[in-house]
Image 1 (tube, rainbow, N blue to C red):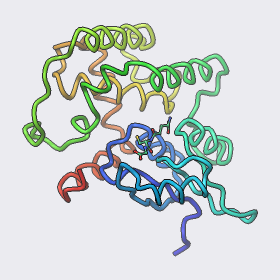
Image 2: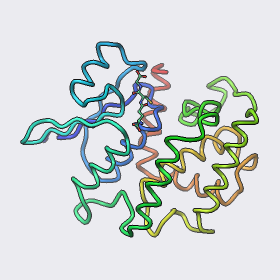
Image 3: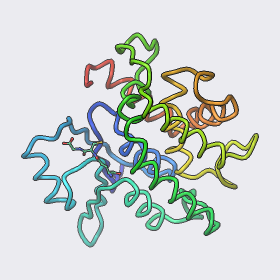
Image 4: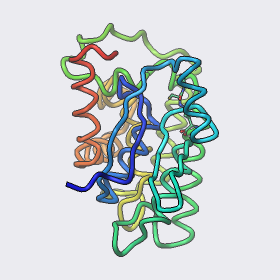
Length: 231
Ligand SMILES: N[C@@H](CCC(=O)N[C@@H](CS)C(=O)NCC(=O)O)C(=O)O
């Protein structure tokens, strides 16, 4: 069997939202890839080794073995854009909308999700979103502070403006922005319950996205890591 030319370095606990993004992007592109797990926080030696490879010592890191030599890249959005351009449609499914305005909107949402909602992200961590049921497997989380609650309302408001009623995806076809927005919403839906903070139509969007095979393949790896005690 041919050795995949692509390797993705992810966190050993499988709970990084940015590694999730890169993994889903590779899977949606129908690309074969190897995975290397990195315990976090990275040791000084590992951070140095990764930064010598790909400029920044972080995960996710994509390594592409090419005739011209290995190319290593961090930053989840840079990774999905590299995959979109290196393995373009129609030979591979799209990651970004074909329409330029929709593509820009997808980038806007993903950039915002990476730079905002810090209190909500801290109080509703992905460790709980990716944990296997029952939720009792992890200690319960306290109620949201006022700051995180305001950010939850902001997130729901953004989702409500973007998701057309009854539409399963943000745009005409699925895009990687759907995976990012669904994960952000699952911080509320999976931890606090559907009805608590998220209107049912938006919770239904998040759950439908969550059922996507690429996302479920990440979730299965996260559950396996949990059972193996990697977190
Ligand atoms: N903006 C980056 C964030 C990447 C990032 O912050 N990665 C963290 C893990 S989630 C990391 O590598 N931390 C190194 C460490 O904890 O030692 C992206 O989108 O990929």
